Amino acid sequence: MPKIQVYALGGTIAMTPTASGMVPSLGAAELVAAVPGLGELADISAETFATIASANLSFLQIKALCEKASLAQCDGIVVTQGTDTLEETSFLASLIYTGDAPLIFTGAMRTPEQLGADGPSNIYNAVLAACDAEGGVYVVMNGEVHDPWQVAKSHTSSLASFRSEDRGPVGHISEGALYLEVHEQQIPIGIGAAVTELPPVALLPAGAEFDIRILEQVVGLGYKGLVIEALGAGHLSEAWADAAETIAKTIPVIFTSRCASGPVFENTYGYKGAEIDLIERGLMPGGNIKSRKARLLLSVLLTDNALDWESRFLAIKASF
Ligand code: ASP
Image 1 (cartoon, rainbow, N blue to C red):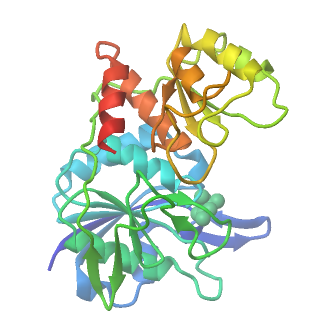
Image 2 (cartoon, rainbow, N blue to C red; image 1 turned 90 degrees about the vertical axis):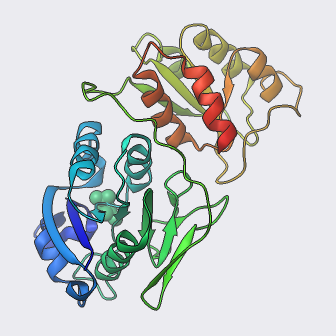
């Protein structure tokens, strides 16, 4: 039987009721024990890594998890955690995890006590994927397999909340079998063992009538990079474009789109604040990479000052 390591980090999948509301409390062994038939699928080892809401998961925890997962003597790894930040933690793991065994992230939209709780089936499917995938980092939710570079939580409560708007899921689980489409996963960048923190990169959304006061603070606050979630195909007001140009003289500035799908443009609109102008002012178009992923990617690229973030970002963007 395949050997699968399960690490539990908390989240709704592990939450139980208290007088003050639902809180994370269940550990890995309890989560695994609640999944019928799991023992027939794999030889499971379970470890509670953290018991927290996913908003509190830190870079250091994800890095430690990836290091542990790389060393685990097993055929596959499953991580259970809260869904709120799963699109970011799995993406971060896809950048830094260099192990051979597949690393599968999952969670639940419903607590174990709720009718139709999805935690057990998600864990079952994640273990199945961990047994059968040939490597790489994936998100398994609601019977679908998603690429962490694509997936986002799109609904506050739907079981089908996890969606890859641009390209759809890369696989699904049906009748107890994993169907993975042929697709390319990004090669991990890796991160130095000595790195203990990510350089701070700010993410600011643009919108109608947004003033520039927060934008103007970014460099002074010590941010080492900025992602601006621009409008539509990559557009800002003239005031934001002026402020962004000033910032781009000091730190890297990437612009992405606040639209749920589609890349930012690079060569269509010519007015002040549109993508051609932003590029001429020194901003980097983010391509297909979504805002929250671009923020983490830039942070990881900036951990190694010796290397040129710009050429590495361009190469990654071109391959995605
Ligand atoms: N607030 C929870 C968390 O992310 C939500 C969830 O797990 O679905 O920890």
